[in-house]
Image (cartoon, rainbow, N blue to C red):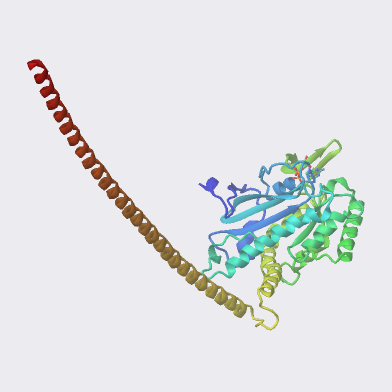
Length: 414
Ligand code: GDP
C-alpha cells in the first residue's frame, strides 16, 4: 500500500493518482528523457520560498491540480524552518516521486541573514548526502533517493515597487546553488501595466545584484522557440486557487471576485499556464540535469578541494572520483584493521583482568582458609584445656566428697 511508504528521512510518502482528464504535464517526462525512463520513477524536489500567506501551498496545489493538504503556516516562528512533504504521483504510466519543501516563517524575522542561512544549509546538506553516496566504496546510486533540490520557486510579493531586501539577499545566497525561478505571487493584485513594469524592475534588480537565476535552455531545437518565450515571461506572474468553478462552459481553478472571475489557466489572466508548461511539461529534465551537472558540480569541486584534491590533481572527473574512492577504500580498510586490533586488545585486556581477579579471589580464599584452620586449632586447644579443667574439677570434687564422708563417719563413732 503506497500510503505506508516513507522516504529515506522517514517522511511519510502519500500516493496520488492525478485526474486523467486534466493532465498537468509531467507525463511527458519519458519523452524529455528520451529512453532514460525508469520503472522506478523520477525524483523531483521542489523548494518553495515565500512569506506566510503569500500563496505557496495554493500554487503547488494549482500546479499539480491536486489538493495536497499542506498544513497552513502561522506567524509564530522564531526562525525559518523547512516543511517537507513527500508524494508519489502517477500520471498515465509515469511515476513521479515529488517532494515539496516549503519555508515556514520566512520573512518574519528581523535578522535577514538568519532567515536564509537555514535554507542554504538544507540545500548543502542534500548535496553532501549525494557526495557521500557517490564516493562510497560500495555505491548504491541506482537506488539512491535523490534529495537534492531541483528547483527553487521564489515567490515575490506583488508590491509593484522594489524587490524586498530580504528576497534579494536570499536569492543572492542561493545564486549558483540551485535553479531559482522567481515568481510574482498573487498576480491578480496588480494591473497589466503594473505587472509589466514590476517584472522589468525585478529583472533589473536581479541583474544589478548579480543574482544568477535559472533560464530555460534555448539551444534545444525542438523547444528553443518555446523556451525563448518562456524566458521572456520570467518572472511569471501567477495566480493560484483552491476553488474549481464553471468558467465559459468548463470547470477551472479560478478566483471569484464581486467584479468577475480570474481563471488561472486563462493566459490572458495570468502566466500560470505558461509557467506550468515551462516547469513540468518542457523543462523538468533540464532542471534535474542542471542540478546535477552544474550546481552539484560546484559543490563537489569545493568538497574535493577541501579534501585535498586541489589544482594539481587530475582534472578528469572520473579519475578524481576513482582516486577519492581509492582513498576512501584505504581509509575503510585502515579503519577495519584498527577496529579489529582494538577488539583483540580489548579482549586481551579483559582476559588479563579476569585472570587477575581470579588470582585475587584465590588468594583471598587461601587466606580465609588458613585463618579458619588457625581458629579451629585454637578452639581445639581451648576445648582440651577446658576438658582438663573439668577433669580436675571432678577429681577435686570426688576427693572433697570422700574426705567429707570420712569426717562424718568419725564424728558418729564419737
Ligand atoms: P502559504 O502560507 O504561502 O502557503 O499561503 P496559502 O497558499 O495558504 O494562501 C494563503 C491565502 O492566500 C489563501 O486564502 C489563498 O486563497 C490566498 N491566495 C493564494 N494564492 C492567491 C493568489 O494568487 N491571489 C490571491 N488574491 N490570493 C491568493
